Length: 260
Image (tube, rainbow, N blue to C red; front, top):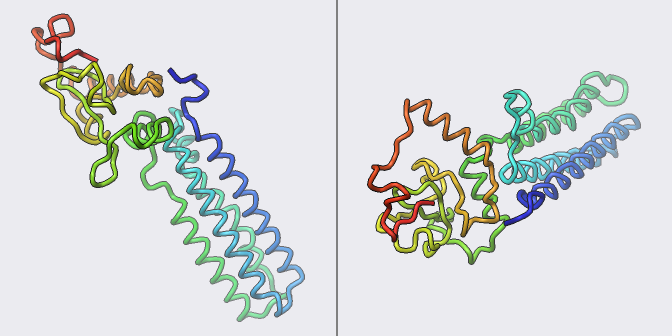
């Protein structure tokens, strides 16, 4: 089993890269502010170029941050904290553009009205575009299908799992088991008469939220507490947890349909 520090392999590097890019974006903003302070007509295109670079750095940083969140989502129970964590890319875009926009609005002696309008339009378009690209429209929580898929991709090579025509990872489960598997020949389900397959989202919807002890052992510790919490929430919502018929419990299950 993977060590705990390796459970979210890759997330730390992605976050570090995002932070570095955001710092560079703010440095670009500082450069644009400096150019504004010494502005001459010959610097117009330099300012536009620096602002475009600012937006590109913001967007790439936000994409890295969102990818890291797929691997290791915020586990905060505070909705406000989780919201800001998920949308940190948007916050950084605002930080990287609003100050220069305010200075442009207040500047009256360095640039003429036409140039000011051009630069404000550029800032507005770049800000809107970078914010739109940085918003996490589908933020992930621990145990979500995107989180599980990202963890599988970060811990296993492409030849260790199957994908469907849409590129989604295919997992396997049995009717009365509680786990999902990436190996249809895993000894827990190899001879099961109720084995089926589908996407990770379909497995989770079927109640198979737990990674297999065997073929998904590297991420077995994934969201232990969160999976249990999700199971309890499902039970509360439905009024009761649906159980397998007594004759098919682990003690009496057919030898070819091991419960996992």
